Image 1 (tube, rainbow, N blue to C red):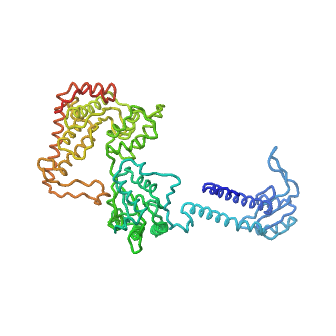
Image 2 (image 1 turned 135 degrees about the vertical axis):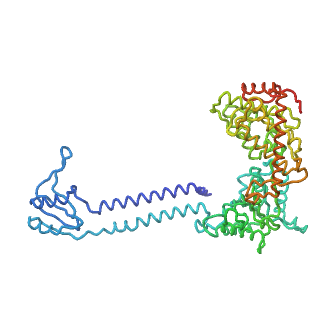
Image 3 (image 1 turned 180 degrees about the vertical axis):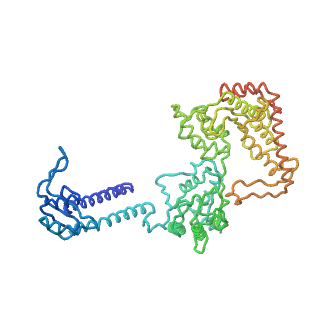
Length: 627
């Protein structure tokens, strides 16, 4: 039995091509240089200036000359010397050149001085030199074109430059292993919806017996990092049908019509292997609203979108091919994409809940050694608002910290440091502060912490720190007992008072304002304005929503926010916001004045330890005495 050797890999092919091209260039240059050396004119050793030549002729020192074009080769009647010492060279043969303006007196001068004169016709290049001069540039240019062709073929698939309109979608290979729904934490609702799609692809007749039509498109929508692409990879691993994956940007090229051609080619490949699935990541890059005028028009992108719309639901039947896409910007998509018959099913992938975060953390911690003090359930409580990608990054950062400390397992302290880095930024170890600045920061954070400890509806304290990070000089962290989906007014008012605790402590102990309260004031103002405008929690606007501002021009589709109330109402809104903030400041100030000794103890402890959490913090602030 003959065993054929395995085919060379693309990398080996590229290396072989490079070696062959380099060898061809070296051989060509070697032949050219050798031919010039062998067949080209060989010049004498010594060249003299033309005025020296005329002077020697006039003195009778030149025996003979041979003229060929502008070149004059000659022989002196006696030897001449050039240089001194070891560099001294004696010679009789020489050459020089006629000046560009010529010398009509030269012939008479040679005859008058009995110089033997010989003339030769201009020497033509040999056929080898002519061939090299003609072919060498052509070979060089041809080599460049060949290498460019191979490069385009490697990037654009079969056909190279001529196949630029072919689909760039890659076919999923199950033999290399992949993800399944077991590898995706949380998102139970999204997984149930996608399992129905897989069931239809595996058994198309089951739905048709009930008179139903299969979905043509599935749109995954959600914030960045929630696992939309991961779910698509799980579908590819679960489905027993051909799965083609690509990105929206893969359809855009500098050539007109390439995007639409690639869409046609992709659907043709999928129809040949139907039932099949197509996944287009970042659909918003080609699916923006046509003619919206936002950011300028783009005819090539619109033509690509038109072709996609036609392939999904046009004159040609497109059964047994399901298109799945993902985007975190659904509001910029063209309405024609979202109508029934195109993307029939819209699946929203939300930020994970606490139970989902516990499941995700368990999956990502499975291949990492964890110390006994690590509580993933408690960590899920401390990571409210984190996406799945954020949780993966958190555990990876904790692993790096454990490696720096040369630990064999990831400890709870490593995870805590990683969480601070993710939420507060990188720790600024080299930052130097004066004692007065440290005391001001400790006073500010102590005010936040004491207000949080004394308010009945505030979230429990977790940690107070005055270690500077890239995003803040200090931090007071609170962890909610449970996730909140509906916010009561008393909870929001207590939250405003906690935000004002830092400014109130500065005024009470130092009698001044500092720039450290900038972020607190901004967040408190935004929260108070939403309470008045959107949630009807102001005294003058208890049962009316005046609308909030749209902050993202792309998601909202509007460049300028519209205010749908009068100037007088706007004045009343400003007064309501100011009243809520002043009330929060007064509540915080009253709490700090009633507990001034506790605040001073907390400040001293922060200056000594820089970070206080857990039982030590509870011991300092004392038992809860909510007001």
